[in-house]
Image 1: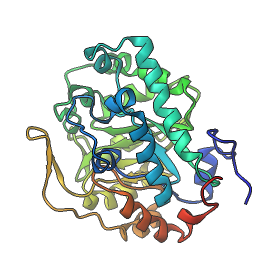
Image 2: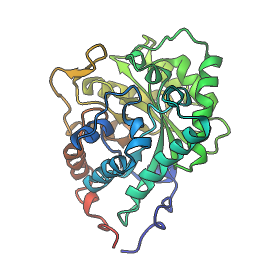
Image 3: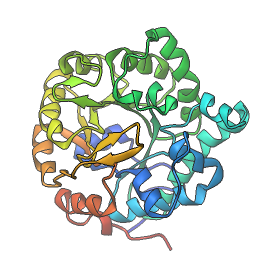
Length: 318
């Protein structure tokens, strides 16, 4: 089988085109894989710290998910912000290099197989920069314009590095979704918009119908849906996103455990059932995977359910 891209380069097909042809498998939680590799993520920058201090660990984590069958890798930039890097003494020029590095690391991992693997630049919510769990609440007391000003520089830095798309992810409320979509205007890349939800509402308490409708008339949005939510909330959300936005749906819930922001740890039992992928597909999901605490073994199981041979297609590059 001939390679479908040059080494470290993008796939021949655009991500949006591929979504029209069938479902694609996302990776799982990057942080839990990094912890499994022995990394300490107690810093406020979380996994983004390793962009400076341990890039090889990030590439290794991406590679693990590629070998498990992931077709779309999400970069280690969720918690990366110019403000957060500045608090560690990292200036803007160096911070911009680290944003670009997040894309290069994922590209290198993707280049290890002869099948198509896309890279999405992660743009997390404002609350992730605060590192106090407020991304699960939203309502920061900032206007849409203020949030747009915060997000635009990091969106531009990631877009300049050339990922295949931007993942506007774990968005807790509609105001921030609007700000992120504004910040992404003119970046030259498609985006997906993914909310963090509780039941049939955003984490800020707004109806999901209104949240998904925000993306319905935006041509740059290639998929809309949910992530880092309880798996039980994903089923209804996928159907609603498909009905309201009339776009492909993205869904990657967490394991079902609950994050304790005060104790900085996970509690409860895992409830992620890979068999749900069939329900999600039937309802319109085209980007499916897992978020926090969903690891390579589960992604490999999803790969089997989605096609059976994803992880073996093409093999590793010589």
